[in-house]
Image (cartoon, rainbow, N blue to C red; front, side, top):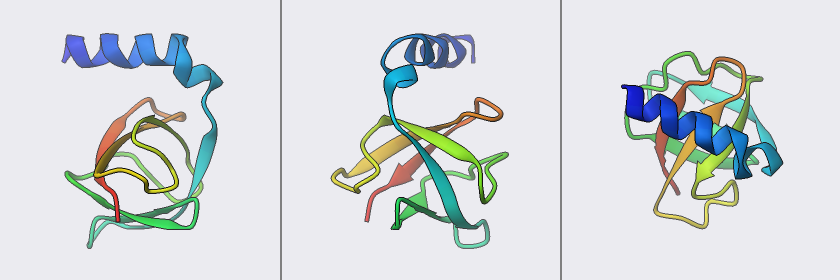
Length: 86
């Protein structure tokens, strides 16, 4: 847990702060689907504390779904979530 917090803190203090933020346009927790940047992503695990309208930063992968998987950081609560790209 401490390692994850350290990684998130490091990401936020370097490139993540310069990274673009994206709004969660829609979220369906029952199906683990999120719409970000008009792309549908599927959560690999439950995205705790992620809600429609929250701003996220891609700390792995990208918002244009040019990836196999991605990880996002919720700027509101600092939680992360792993996603499958479409």
